[in-house]
Image 1 (cartoon, helix red, strand yellow):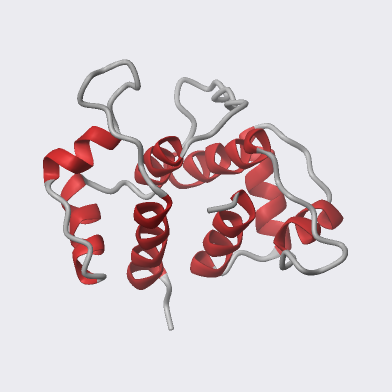
Image 2 (image 1 turned 90 degrees about the horizontal axis):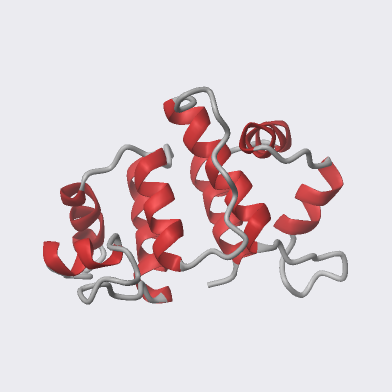
Length: 153
């Protein structure tokens, strides 16, 4: 899954306008312009499309956490230079204050059945032997589950 897909999905799910998107990046510690946000949200085939780097998406996700949960110790979290699906899953879990059972239920509604142990393996440190890489399919379905839960129609 591309970073742009994740950004578009979150914007759609929470119905964020451009001003809100700019504010979230700002809360995460990055100043962006409306034009940058617009180019990141365009479809891949659009000539003005620009890919969003991992670090920029990390700023956005950190801003989402701060917006929904508040600052921790009045310090800005450091935006990671490289993001994995596992890190994105963790940041969204924190921002949305989800418990493991909530995530499992969202995935179950989409006919994705994983055990609590499999889910916890995604949140372990990469150096641990039980660590498992979160594949695009899990992250994509998790984002769809977030849409079902949080998108008001």
